[in-house]
Image (tube, rainbow, N blue to C red):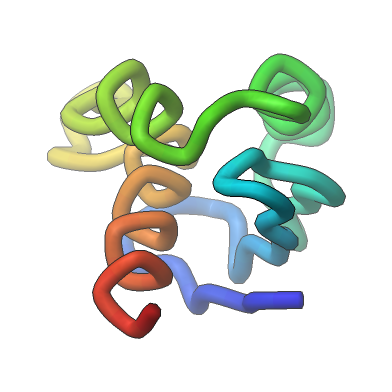
Length: 82
């Protein structure tokens, strides 16, 4: 399981597994419970590249990032390490 320490959002970290380039077991530590659970369920089984494309650049209010954007950043970092 990969774990990414988030930056600039309420969630403290995001954990996930990748199987056959698809996301599984996505979990946010902290953050807005309903929203992070919703994002996690929506991306479950999604192709990593599609998730990055859909989530990258989403902002949360005046913040330049969001929990979905942080997941995209986590996935990009994961891919760079593979």
